[in-house]
Length: 135
Image (cartoon, rainbow, N blue to C red; front, side):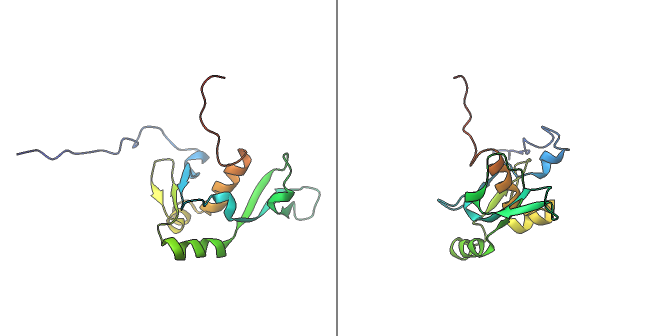
């Protein structure tokens, strides 16, 4: 008789994620050709010279030195993708490796996962740079 193997989550307790980074998505699973940056309607850019403290711009109007502090996902685009691919169309990956849907993410971290991931990607220069060693 073969004894059952007991598996443990190898990430559990591996690295303490007690800073703000622990509340940020490390990535996402999305349908083919759907990238989080394509789901953003407009961006909020820091602008201390205005009464509001920010200005709202479209992607084409973003400048390289703009400090992005918010964005508005296009909820109609998101709903359409969900109606095509179903409730598992979007999965956001936590620092501990959990894959959460948008509602579960919002409940767990009290942030909009589409907005947070898009701002992270845009501030890093796009969809993420490939890991490279050497020149």
